[in-house]
Image 1 (spheres, rainbow, N blue to C red):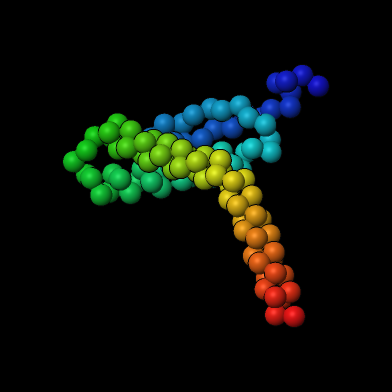
Image 2 (image 1 turned 90 degrees about the vertical axis):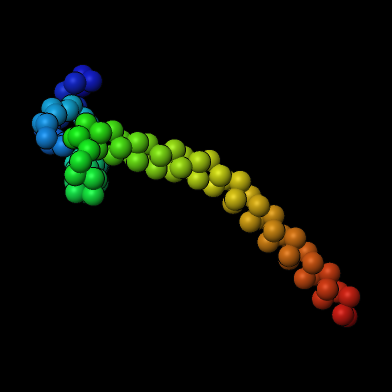
Length: 105
């Protein structure tokens, strides 16, 4: 199977423009949800700041999503560390509880 034959072509309306995109079929729902989220946030910015140009609202929308993505990456990077610290804390608490039980006996 060639690389292009396992892809589909979809049209996404983002803002006031239609964008043809070629994607893997299993990603269609994600792309459509992303376009919907962009359009909703863009609409809120345009409503909240009617004096800003369309392009400025689109830029602010993109910045908003970029900040969210960067923060999500940071959280994902910290997740393994948090898991390790949680496991080590549980081991220490278990060892302390075991020692306390032995001291009482």
